[in-house]
Length: 173
Length: 379
Figure 1 (tube, chains in turn yellow, blue):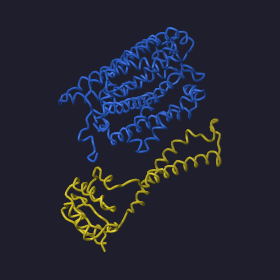
Figure 2 (tube, rainbow over the protein chains, first blue to last red):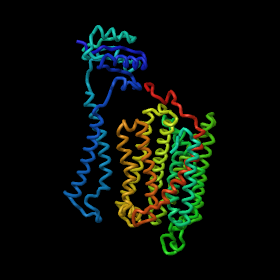
Figure 3 (cartoon, each protein chain N blue to C red):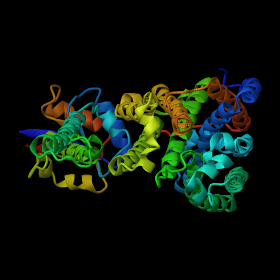
Figure 4 (tube, rainbow over the protein chains, first blue to last red):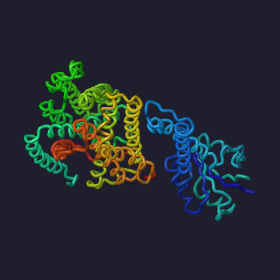
């Protein structure tokens, strides 16, 4: 059972060119590099994801929740006349509302990101390939998933070799 | 208004409008001096803000660098070099102090114990001397920096860094006292330690609101559209977001403290601004300078498109003009919204002359070319 085929490149520009070419034939293309490569996300066709929406919801829940808490405790639960000010003293409720909006949004963004990308993960088939630890040092990898509808173990390997990589490795499941 | 491609034309047309409006202002000023001086102060503060914060932006860029400078430096430097004109435009105000400030009216001072107590600071000679000091200092910094911009020798770069450090520090101190002089002292019993920072951040919005639309229009008129990349716009949008959030934060905290303490001599500033029809102006200022930019900058499609970003920045600039009105006029007309045709005429007069002056400087600017570092590899 094959998880994917990996092509190894020496530099970011080679990887970027290879990704652009491979994306014309395959959909499930992945790229692994030791650092962020400018333009790689666009070349991979990474489009919208749900993190912004989750962040917005987290912010609304955080801010709305703490404003409700302030309003409920000051107006309903324990109303006190403080120097003639209104019970619902919105100006002083704003700072905690602001803080909790940020906190809620930040937590939602972080947790939402982890949930959506499936991290943390104890193991991944890529780690079956000994060379793959170079992806965090000085090598750049392009992967094509076996689940791609145009994937064929022999033809895809030939295709990847045509991209002029240092080598092509099979990733066992 | 004009084809920006032909910059001397910009200067000619803006200058012509400025002179015509100036004549109207002089006639209006003879008929109604207090309205003239109020209008002149509102618009002078507005232009001072653009010129000063543009200089601070240039100084910050000298010290930190950054991709945003490639496109924005030409308009910011042009705005910075208008400092001598802005200093000259302040001169008429020296003759209108009694029309603007209660502390400059002897009968008002005689009648008020508070004004007598504050007279060691709030008096006409002191005010004029202080403002000559600020304006000469700011003009000297603009001139010194401008002189060193032409060369790029190590000596020039070091000199620019030194001037920038000194200029930023001097600005931080002087803008505080200047804001107190021009804005806070209109309501002599009121004081706020935040008003200087509040004005300073507003000035940064104004300079950005001038520079971004100007750069975008200029690039389009000179067919440089690719020169401003979506990534540049993303940077500009994030900077704008920083400025408007800072502005709203300082403005709100000042309000929160005054609201919480609820002491008459502190609420006097907000009284006409909130309990009368002036609050509609305050609402417009908050929408243009806070709500609209913040919401718009959440969307990458708006932030990374030069046209929409320039529109948001242009609206923020309009909001800054309204903010200048909001800072001054409610302190003079307590009973409700009261604007004079001179408020607009003075905008055209001072703004026209200012734009003509800035345009002269822009004609000397080379076309901003994208550098290998400025354009993303995939662009």
